Length: 323
Ligand SMILES: [Fe+2]
Image 1 (cartoon, helix red, strand yellow):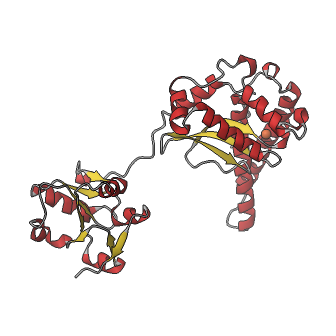
Image 2 (cartoon, rainbow, N blue to C red):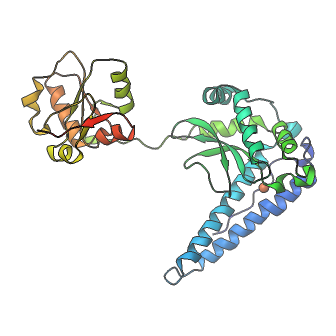
Image 3 (cartoon, helix red, strand yellow):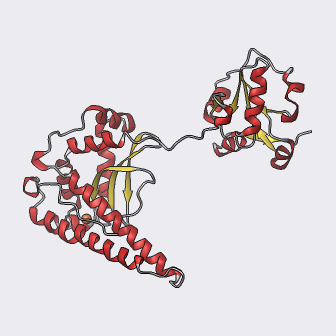
């Protein structure tokens, strides 16, 4: 397959403090160069007989292809970020402005972090990116060297090129002056529109256990907060005996009960306080125990992720061997 050039997004003659000569050289030599490299590498990969090609050749070509592909994508975003005198706004507005304030504290706080990251990259090389992460529905500033360290699943909406080729024609080694000029030329209306598009992307699909219908579950963070705040909760470890014996630890504050005999121990529980029951990973055993308890009139929920989610949270456990 072939990758195709995008036209330059910004109008170089409208930029403030960034010369058309600089933008033209950047577009032609660095963006265009990456696109030409990307197509050459891709063609070479397509011609390989993978059964006969040494691993280091495949490894090197795939690494260079990734670098070239990300370079083209980030350069397109960089040129689309620059608006110059045509830029309609000097600051974010609308839902995007609210997201910036929510995720960074304030626009000035975002700006301070972004500029500090850019200045820290001066003299080196790399990208400074504002990225929307659908998984958490939040914005995040990141540095990316080698064109290839993008946040997995993130959608970059604003890009600053800190490779020397992006500024040396106009600014020599004065990267800080280039960063100032870049910040003055951001097309906030375009960034805002990209944010609105990115915010429509759903987070990864959550775990669904259709066989347990609408059985209520509760997350480990919520349970930990309940315990820390002194909320009364009956925490039941219902891991199968062999699992609990093998791990030899238990959530602090939990009582182990054999999931094979729910009806035998259910009578020990209070119906006035909530019950959280967990198994090893939060699948069948814990869910079935929670269902049995609910059928007996208890306010029972299963713990999402079970014992290992509790441990992955770094929450306290204690030594335990089931009797
Ligand atoms: Fe560049």
